[in-house]
Image (cartoon, rainbow, N blue to C red; front, side, top):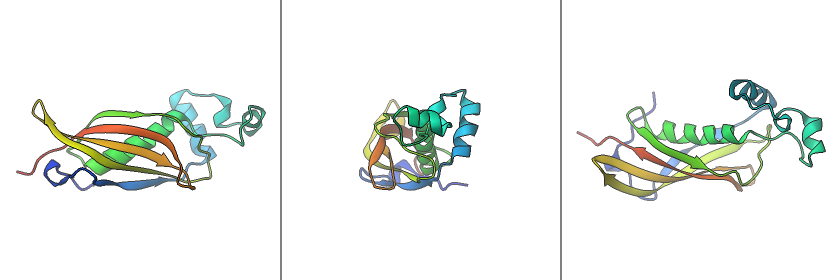
Length: 143
């Protein structure tokens, strides 16, 4: 079970523990079936190349899910993910690892909730941010 993060212990600038993902073409096929996104650029090499891509690319929503995993794994079982958003700024390909990273940018209380805002992103193997985003999490306080 994930360790619980408490609002009391978080500071602006706190880094979220990175999560490395190693997506495969098989994972993309499974994700296409689960999500209903059968656009061929995600599983058909010839089709992807005929559309001026180097090969098949990850689904944007799968990359968003990787960022969701980063945040929910970090916040612990008593945390509550309030908001998750991202933009698709670069293409990631199966067979090449992506690393989900983040840091706390704001810590505040609002309407009785103990909140933190985070900047989150996916980096490719070259350290380029391909999927920038943000999240807001409610965290418990220590008793």
